[in-house]
Image (tube, rainbow, N blue to C red; front, side):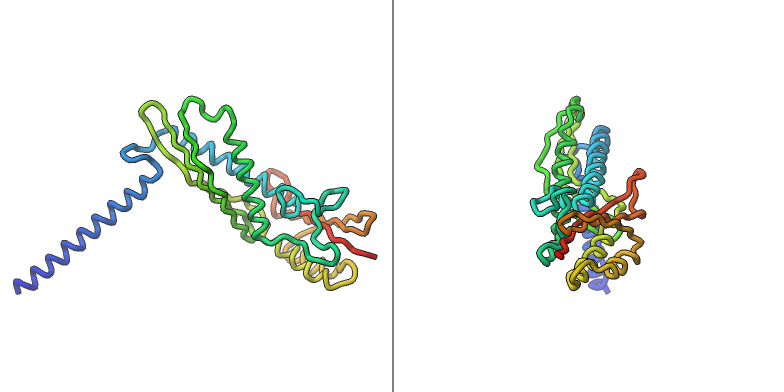
Length: 248
């Protein structure tokens, strides 16, 4: 009986030690946003809100630009001569960028826009802010939204207060994933035809409630402007542009 009680007591002690260790680990991890021994300071929230606003604005601006440029932050030479829209079909080849490529273009654009935003001279001169190296923004294109996560370490000091913030995220309710899949379906089917496949056009875009206008250039190039009335921010609708070459 005595041995059994000692065994039970040992088990209780081990469980108690485990619980204390878990609680201690929780507080250590929660404190990673601040330097050891220092509570979160008022300026931490102020500066974090400023950086968050920059990220929100950058994401929205870049995603709209990506749509206008057919998946690119900066257009390459392989674009139409008049409206500067990238070719998705040229010389009977599929030139549509992959979804991973577009995510990379959004990441590149956000890194540039965010850096520019945070270089504003009004970026809290009353604080001593040490900027770490910004990691490449991680982008995920979902059917009805685009998400970004970025690690940007900032050490903030004012008098005796010293804090650190580093992880930021944002999202924009643009149906880029739906649009991409619809355009990709149209391109795949259009390549099978001699000229423009209007039936493929309707089959690809109608189920997602997407509208599109087609404009022709004199060399047999069709410019497609895909409009999504379900992706509107501040009364601005999202458009996605691309071009196909049709040889006569």
